[in-house]
Amino acid sequence: MKKYIITGLLVWLPLAITVWVLHSVLGVIDGVFASMLSAWQAVLPTSMAASIERLRHIPGLGVLILVAGMLFTGMFVANIFGQWALQQWDKLMSHIPIVKSIYSSVKQVSDTLFSSSGNAFREAVLVQYPHPGSWTIAFVTGKPSGEVADALGEEHVSLYVPTTPNPTSGFFLMMPRSSVRPLKMSVDAALKHIISMGVVAPEGESLAAVGGANPARNPGG
Image 1 (cartoon, rainbow, N blue to C red):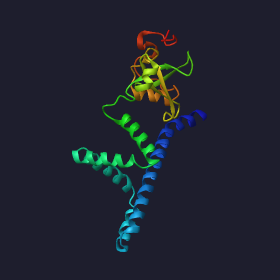
Image 2: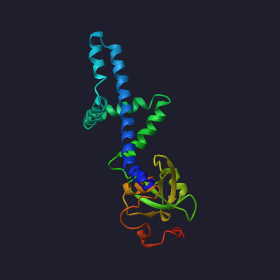
Image 3: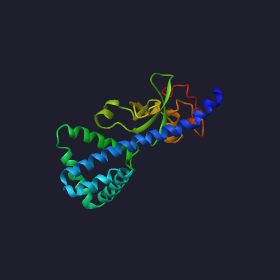
């Protein structure tokens, strides 16, 4: 009986967590949409308030408006005028105290992660962390530059080492390229391996086969 209960739990748990996450995300979006409607009701005539109130009870309308807003925003900034308007907006945000620090940092990170021409999270590697002989999977986010690169001397790579089972938090490291072992697995496969705490084995070649060497040996010599 215990075996059947656990088997049933394994069947329903992924679906339950998926529904819970989607419900939470939709709840946040609907909350933002409701706040926008309340702001419109405060400035529009009373005759239009009843019509706006009916929009509040349409399920999923907030998600549709969000998707449409992102679509039209992307189409707008794809032309010359939109690029100019976006530059003016960035200049405005960069001159507001406190806000400029948060906005600039988030923009740099988002541009790096989601840019089609960027190299962030394009490669999974094997590194020794947090001490020699202990191995973990990390993601290459780029290369040190400027004063940091001059101080390091030899070629280094910037790495993000995610934690498990929550990969959204982790550690930023700069390690010599010679100490990093490239992996042939995709970033998605590496993330699944990390989130599952090693339970879900990555597809393809084994880690030991990558580079034709034994991972138990220090690559740095």
